[in-house]
Image (cartoon, rainbow, N blue to C red; front, side, top):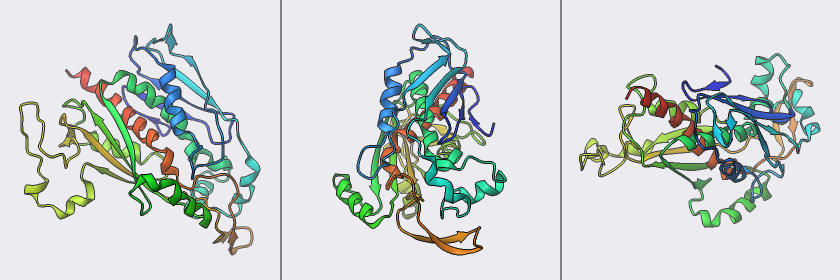
Length: 329
């Protein structure tokens, strides 16, 4: 289960950043669902680099589906989707064996896996693994009646996204990185997804979002800013028989269960750990703190292309709970 998520709609991710391929196995996909490969490709393209502040690494993310689909529809058997890694430069990471990057998983990975882990490009900890996650989420959305939307609402101190390019140019000049906040909204929600305790919709969302590299904060609805409100202000007054509420401070979830209002999730993506500036950090070869200059190709603002990752990860959570809900109807 450590490489898998889900119950009825279950995904298993495999591969590392610089291995020959990465991919996903999807189990539990109902039969007879029309599979739109163009939609999978479109979502993968949205995740790719190219904009200011994103990595120079260029992957086509061409995928192959080797099982689970026949005549354009799901068969009901496991779907296997694989993506070949093409633009790989492993030599840039050799020095990280002796001097792990601050803020990165290099140190804990080396101890946990006793040095046998594939450290190149971050290995199993790399954001590269979000590509098959996006593909799985694109397929998950094909069984859901919901409407998904995501937007980047803040990068560092910047809230005017029209100024994003110029803001990131300044960060690039400093050799630094910056984080961001992404808002995901799901419309046309139904009542009933989730359980009262251990499988709450919000707890499952948190579990999935925190599984994604660089995620350091998750809010449902109003979130932490609700600290300034009284209960009389925070309570979402029900205004019709469908359960529609006047406000949506709870983000579409009541008691761990979807209440039919828009599902609203905000996620904080931390600044990328690998930066161009020289840093001081422990060197296990010299036994002292030494300067570290990180090579390789890295995003200055990973949040810029993480929106589709979070959106599709949320779709995976909803697909699983949607199928569970159908079983008990």
